[in-house]
Length: 125
Image (cartoon, rainbow, N blue to C red):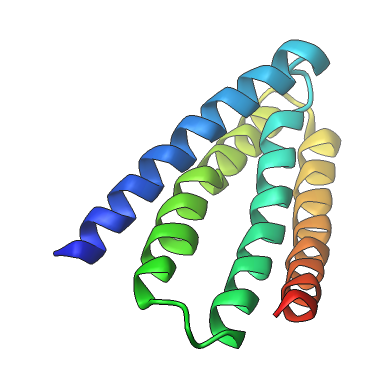
C-alpha cells in the first residue's frame, strides 16, 4: 500500500510543478511555440536519467524512492500527452513545419538530456 501512496504524493507534486512551470514559461515566452512543454519534457528527461542512475548505483536507497521520484514525481511532471496534443494542434492549424520541428527538437534534446542525466547521476553515485 505504501508504494501507491508514494506514487500518488510524487505524482501530485510533479503535476503541480508542471502546471506552475508551464504557465510561468508561457506567460514570459508566449504560446505560439510550446516552450513550456518543451522545457518540462527536457528537464524531466534529464531528471529521470539522473535519478535512475543514483537510485540504481547506490543500493542503500529504499525501493520506495523509486515509487516516489521517477514513477510518481517525474511521471506527474513530464507532459508527453500535452506534447502530442500541441503537435497535433500545430499540424491541424496548417503549421506542419512548426509541428515537425517541435517533434524533432523534443526527441533529440530529450534523448541528450536523459544521457546527460545518466552521466551526471553516475558521477554523483
